[in-house]
Amino acid sequence: MVLELDNLRYQHPGQARPFIHIDHFALQAGERVLLHGPSGCGKSTLLSLVTGIRPARDGDIRVAGKPFSALSQRQRDAFRADHIGVIFQAFNLLPYLNAVDNVCLSAGFSRRRCEREGASNNRQRRIAAQDLLSRLGLDAATSALPAWQLSFGQQQRVAAARALFGKPDLIIADEPTSALDADSRDTLLALLCEQCEQAGSALLMVSHDSQVADRFHRSVAFSALNGGEHHAA
Image (cartoon, rainbow, N blue to C red):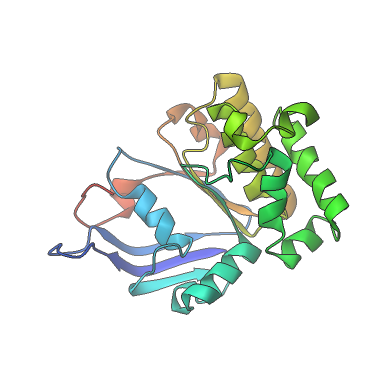
């Protein structure tokens, strides 16, 4: 299994009981799962726990067979760089770097992902980054612009390329198509699915767009997965 959650509980300080309450969830290598539910139900909080950005104090999270939730913050950061690609809802791009540099910057934190991409030096990393960006509709001229000059949808595609670089074991995507038109959405999802199939990566994606469900092996309602109380998250 690429991802396993067992007895996962989470509550904000001051809350009487957990609003994340998941007994068991598992994701196999190469499996694509769509997680859907209304805004504020806790989906993004769950993704922050799965990626180790938010510490999970109760329950177990295993990623690529590793007891991920038991690691220290520093160990989680290093492990995430090697094994997890994240498409953040807020993108988290560095605005003064161009698209290629944003992709290469994150790649520079993981030798393992550079090796999996066949990019052992900076030149090869930049070529691989531009190849991903081109396949997402960003040509070399656009990719040379600083991120702050890109449109919202273009920034979203840069964030996707950054997550895909290096064929991580697990890709976590938080509303990655929310700013895209139908054609751009389909291009992005096609590339996500293609890369996952080629690398054997698992994909866990949150989306409100029901039209994308047919691209996934499973579609899971957050309310069916989570037994906790629903609070804004």
